Amino acid sequence: MDIEKIIQQLKDKNPQEQEFIQAATEVLEHIAPVLEKKPEYREQKIVERMLEPERVISFRVSWQDDNGEVQVNRGYRVQMNSALGPYKGGLRFSPSVKQGELKFLAFEQTLKNALTGLPLGAGKGGSDFDPKGKSDAEVMRFCQAFMAELYRHIGSRLDVPAGDMGVGAREIGYLFGAYKKLQNSYEGAITGKGVGWGGSQMRTEATGYGLIYFAQQMLKKADSNIEGKTCLVSGAGNVAQYCIEKLIQLGAKVLTVSDSSGFIYDKEGIDEEKLAYIKELKNKKRGRIKEYAEKFDAEYTEVDKEAKENPIWNIKADLAFPCATQNEVQEKDAENLKNNGIILIAEGANMPLTAEATEIVEKSDILYAPGKASNAGGVAVSGIEMMQNYLGSYWTAEEVDQRLKSIICSIHDRCLKAAEEWGFPKNYAAGANISGFIQVADAMLAQGIV
Ligand code: NDP
Ligand code: 2IT
Image 1 (cartoon, rainbow, N blue to C red):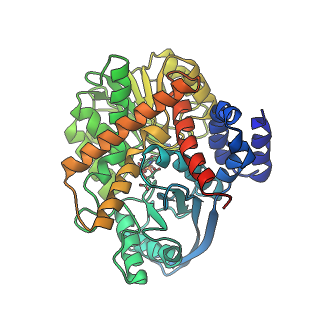
Image 2: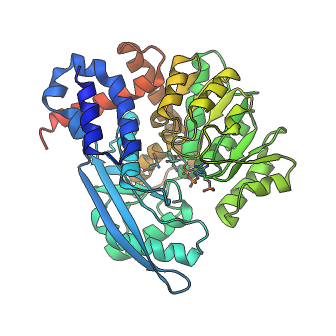
Image 3: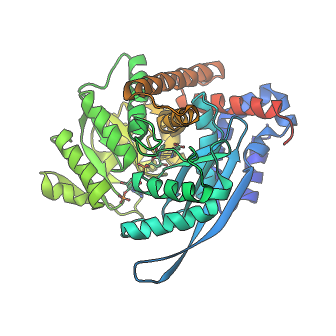
């Protein structure tokens, strides 16, 4: 089969884009039997076309910091695939942002958005701007300068960005304000807006809650449930916070939370009061997670980012929810999780497992949910926000939560069905890749060579 050839071409064409190659290779390995059975995909070069973004926009963002010094950042929008609907996906502000990182995220988004069953194409964007340590005024000026270019490339029927790492409620507010001013029109060209000014109920909660709804479905299939389970959660941002919140509501015991400096191990478990403290610390004070250990009686461990393992994944527990960033679970971490008898790993972050870690997990008995399936709740409620904006009305939190649950259940079932059908029984990663791929591929075939 020519999968090897496609992977080689991908490497030759994108030599600097390691994460993009990693994400694409994982998908290609799973869709090999599909390509074998459907020669029209090969004839029409569907895979090659899907791996080439429809458009990549890169631009200068100049702004002035509080000292009057001029700063220059790079902004991007990768418009990956519009076969199913307008480009849709988040914006990431982080010093790590480069074209390859955004292409990996936009490629994952293509299959994820297909899985939601909503009319959403895929994109991703952002900047190497680091919001850490910046004043609110600096963040606002940066967002305005960023939007001064981006606004001409987005629109409610064209491309609809949202938040991702480093882009939360504050940034979305400034970005939307700038967009509205430049466009001279109040349009739903961004999701994740505040409730009361165009945003949907439950968007803030959606990714974390959706992740746990997905894990619930997996456990149900295995005649188990969340109640009483001990859990490892990484990250302390939007996804981690609402993952922890839902776990507490369902009677689980959450032992850990982390940020880019280190992690907390709280043997007593994180309760509602401690979670409220984490939200205040991370969303308002913008402090470090270490402060949790000083406030409550818990252990704090600094993490060496260059190390080959992270001790957070060597704590004995039943369920693991990596919700921080890509490649945060390495080979040795996967070994540790397996040896400690973890039952389930469900990804809140995008591609948190390295290729080596994924291989270990896929070969084990661990129930494993890939991010493109288990974290799709966020973009699903973004899609629901778009619907409300088109209609010019709002739905209640109960209605949105109900829709979210039903989308997550349908993704869960789709993954299992495709996995079974294509010879990967119970493999959610294969099922997600195959099911998402076929939907986008068929739309591309129908729309001709464009
Ligand atoms: P946030 O910016 O809100 O939070 C990110 C968290 O991860 C922060 O606590 C950050 O720490 C921590 N972190 C970042 N880098 C590292 C690292 N190298 N090691 C350990 N911790 C780290 O982002 P989100 O919660 O929105 O996003 C988290 C993940 O979920 C990303 O992979 C994102 O793509 C994915 N995702 C997000 C969705 C959303 O709706 N927001 C939807 C689907 C997926 P610090 O505080 O030090 O920066
Ligand atoms: O990775 C993701 O799915 C997101 N960051 C959310 C995208 C969105 O458009 O809500």
